[in-house]
Amino acid sequence: MTTKTSVPEEVLLALRRHQRVLIAAHAHPDADAMGSCLALAWALRSIGVDALVFNEDGMPSFLKFLTLPGPVLTSLERLPCEPELVVCLDCGDRARLGEAIQPLLDRVPTVNIDHHLANPNFGTVANWVDADMAATGEMVALIAEALRAPLNGALAEALYVAISADTGNFSYGNTTAGALRLVADMVEQGLDLPRLRESMENNWTESRLRLWGRIMQETRLLEDGRLAAALITRDTLRECNATREDAEGLVEQLRRLSGVRVALVLREEEKDGKVQTKASLRSSGKDNVRDVAAQFGGGGHRNAAGATLPLDAEKALTVMQPYIRFVWNRLQ
Image: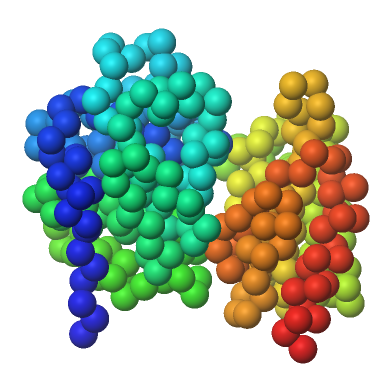
């Protein structure tokens, strides 16, 4: 039997000694980021800590079935008072928390909890970075247990969503025995998996359906079928009346095609009047897409990574394709 990982004492000490805690994760939060934030807020509130959640992009619509411990703040102007501590979750570097929170991080102590390998340990009070963890949600679950917060109710639902999302519903190579044991413990404590999966999976909008249908038809099979690339332009989103969130999860579906070793989704967006492209990469086995993302200032995990390029989608594909090819050639 494997030994359960212990939460670093300096992390627990920081959480216990501060009464007002702000919890934040990376902008454009995914399920692990937001689920971890909500779960930690529930755990801290259970021991009497006044915990609030902040994210400059707010609560993703696909997670709105989760019960909140309080409002998810999108502006620091709405803070009732200055926090004593900021806990940063699932954030590979400080900049990914967004611009609005940066001045606060300069004057308030921070704890950094993450499972991304390249995290630079930017916390000023404590850092817990463990790339062997399946998800940041798994780390928050261990914190909750250490704080003696029961893994049930809304806390357990947030944890399950976080861990399930980052492990591909417990099918990816990063799935740990510890993550599976946590889910078993939560089920024993009353977690209703069928109801939760219903909320997680059966919530598509018509816009999402139309977008996925169009992108599936237009997906390009390159490199003798080893690379599946989907380009989502701003025009495509507009014509399908779709949003950024409607594209979530598409890249995992492209990886299902037999013979595809790397799936790539390139989604355009506009920032400060300029076009940029968000790249999402997925692979299996030894194909290390994190190395590809790193070439463009991104990061992630070996089989799941991402980056932002200051290019339109077509040009982004042109510059990324040789690096994907290089990853394969290096394995030969």
